[in-house]
Length: 61
Image 1 (cartoon, rainbow, N blue to C red):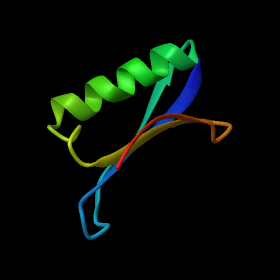
Image 2: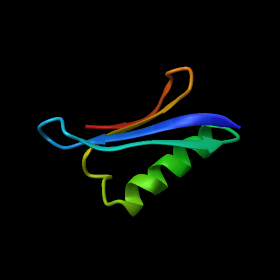
Image 3: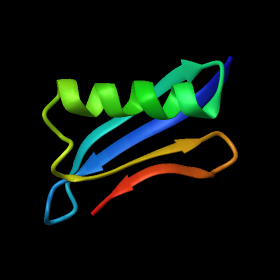
Image 4: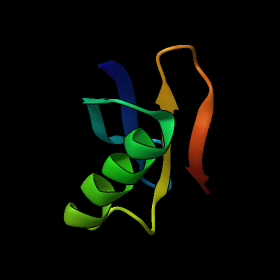
């Protein structure tokens, strides 16, 4: 299982979420990360999901 990092920020840069999740593939990591953002009502905020190599899988500004 690989690690994926889910972060979200408000408009002034305050960290709203900084979680680590595990998934088998990049697509599963992206999907789980976006689901976590949705559950926390953070999809409208600046957010990203990256894999352990730093590859950006999802970004919203």
